Length: 294
Image (cartoon, rainbow, N blue to C red):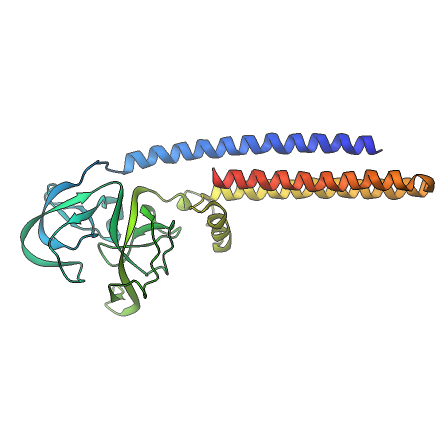
């Protein structure tokens, strides 16, 4: 009986390992597709490029092309977030206001690398590693959620909206009614313009708790398909471990009842089955960890 159980254990471990390899390969393929999407969306440039402007910008302002004149830039807005392409890196020194009407001038815009950018606490405190998207306050970034289709970059420092804020403002809705007070600050970011993997087509959005767990493990935004696959792997692993444990305990009890003198050897075999069940569970959890991290 113990030989049969051990045979089942070996098969389960092999199936789990092979399944993990297939899952990781599928996830890698998905990431490759995402990378190609990033190349299509981003506008690369190794050095800041000069652009004309009818207004002055504060360093760190997120900008987009002027629809009327491609050689000029304007403040990036949330309703056209797919057009945002860079950060102002040199300009005249101004107070906290994002922009002000002045004489025409030239600004330099960086489209890649690590740059200082204006951020707000609209979606709560920002932590290093969080993905950022255009906020309701034009020209600034905020912590992203699955609702933002396009990500602009990744935070390289934290911002809580209070201690390291350089100013604050009150956001207003479309009717002009104030609805939220937010802090404004400047933090270094890594410009990585891409589609938000959390908004990929699924029949339903993931619960917020699952999204937080996925980000906590992977330390980056996770696509819904990866989380679904991870949940399936965990479920299958737990089922296999429980089946092995149940079969081992049942077999040991029956064997002891038939031959009480062999109690020690039977209990030793039961311990082996329990350890094997734990090993299968560990392999499954490690597979999920690799799936989320890679």
